[in-house]
Image (tube, rainbow, N blue to C red; front, top):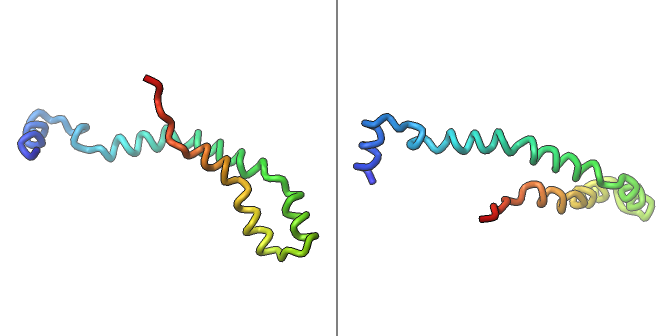
Length: 86
């Protein structure tokens, strides 16, 4: 493996030696899509559910804590790795 890396360095194949660039590029490309889906998941949470929990006797902290679980399915859908069809 070391000989292969030395050969790549001699041929100046630096993009193949730095996978961090690929990871950064993939993150930059995917972030807007994940952000848009995550924002939609939080916006679709009905605030009336939190108010209903408060009226039924739940404390504000508990209602907020329970309310944070409501967008989880949408967040999972936005961050799930996609499999490409062959």
